[in-house]
Image (cartoon, rainbow, N blue to C red):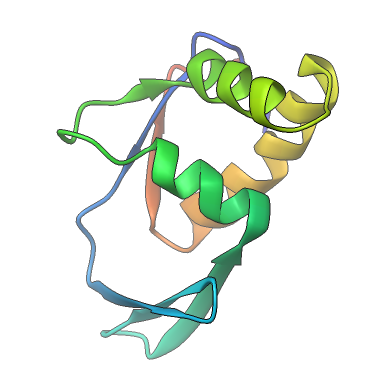
Length: 100
C-alpha cells in the first residue's frame, strides 16, 4: 500500500472489543474471534486516531510521531504504511485517499 501525507485514516466502529493489559491494547473481533494487539508506537498511532470519528491525515500522525520519537518522516511513513495495512486488514481502520 502506498500512502501519502494527505491520505486520511480513521478508526472503524467494527465488531470488536478492546482492553488494556500491561501497556498493551488487545482487540478481539467478536464475529471472527480473532485477536490483535498494539503496544509502543502502534498504540501511540491508535491514540492519535482517537477523536470525533473524523479522519486524520497521515501527515498529522507522522508529524506527531517524528516529534515524540527519534525518527525521520520517510522512515515513519514507511513504517506507518505497514501498520495501517495490518490494521485495515483487521478491520480496525479505514483509509481514504491512498496513492495508487
